[in-house]
Image (cartoon, rainbow, N blue to C red; front, side, top):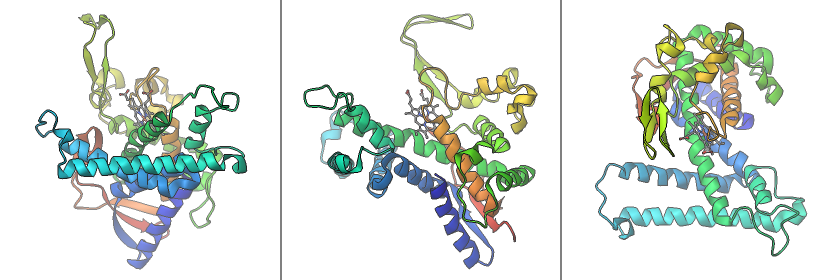
Length: 352
Ligand code: HEM
């Protein structure tokens, strides 16, 4: 994660230098690219370049699926060889064949490499054929199709969401320059200045306490997943109302995160310190629903928080950020909460 963040900030440094010390960069697209990079590296390790191609194909498939949501669906039309369907079939085939190739290479290299590897794919292959069950005739825990589906799920669930968290964090840092300064001091103190090429360790990232509070407050005000749904399995009593079984309930996270009854009269204000344990922030953490709660809560929440700390620290150690004057604030809910017109920022070297 830290390595991917360093590559991104190095590119920014070149841009800043070649534009006389200051440049406008649209951050949301930068983070889309970065989070795809991080996911490809953690999921596929050394095969990350091929993995990234898979993710790019999935991204296009997701785009086609969402752009079709509002169009009228003629029954059976998904089997017609239209231009769009042909593209979908081609992308689907590419995703499958590339993943199969990566997986087959891993299986072939297992003996020589002494295992399947310690990335997500390696862990899934271990689960698929653990040593004690991996001999012929023993049941597989995950089929090849399930492994392929898991790869898709991790990308869909973890890439865009984390990218939006980073984008909104940068937005709030630019509107709260005093926090930007505080977090920069903390990042330099715990991870070193940006001049050295040192990558922060997990221990260093774990010490970024103020940054953690800042990320939690960002999640509260700009939850990347603004609503979730659940279906009741049986009739259930909720707040004096009996909800029949089989009902779909929508939890409007974005609205609930600004509820004064839960968060207090300053629910609409930006205040990361509400999550500070010393100030009784335990209740605040329990009310935060950005990663959902319970048995189906987000499996990647620690992943997302560590990644965000690594990226924000890498940026703050090297740059100051301020909002481009022509930025238009328009958070838009397209399944995830994104800035409709992107996030253009003026990026300046920290020593400028
Ligand atoms: C800021 C970033 C993230 C946010 C806000 C987020 C939010 C959520 C939410 C709200 C859910 C529950 C959805 C529901 O039940 O309807 C969820 C589930 C899930 N998330 Fe995340 N997520 C993030 C990052 C990640 C990452 C980085 C990964 C993978 C590395 C990931 C993997 C998953 C998976 C696999 C599930 C399904 C879990 C299950 O159903 O048991 N998420 N996420």
